[in-house]
Length: 171
Image 1 (tube, helix red, strand yellow):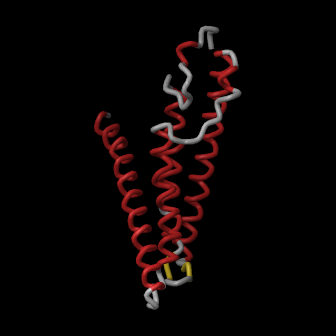
Image 2 (cartoon, helix red, strand yellow; image 1 turned 45 degrees about the vertical axis):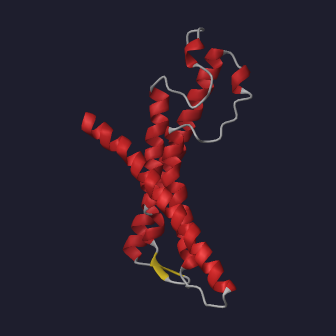
Image 3 (cartoon, helix red, strand yellow; image 1 turned 180 degrees about the horizontal axis):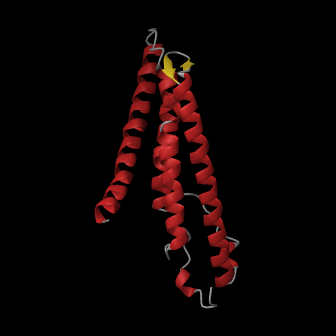
């Protein structure tokens, strides 16, 4: 079991590193594209398409890391003034809704991925790219997001900054 946990935790490092490489590649390709235009040269036709795909992959690879490391935006103004028991209930409802949303996105992206794979459609722009490549990171990352929200639901760890141990009213 420790091996599975270690591999799962290592997956976050791989996704974060991959996201870092992607954002660096996007930056460099945009700089090269702009410099070529300034120099009167024709930039590569693939730049815009790859940047768009890169932004999607970057976003998807960062999302599980942000849930794990509490980097998502939270609005605590209402929750922080609630009694501890109500606060804990609201937090659990939020986690359940996030799990449901992530599972639905996982399911839908699996359906889109398998349909695109089976139909062998192409995304025709500056360069032709198989459409299924667009959907590859989605089921994996949304699935991890669902697992992470379930981890918050079933443990004492919280996304919020308040201390759950102050919940003295029995919930």
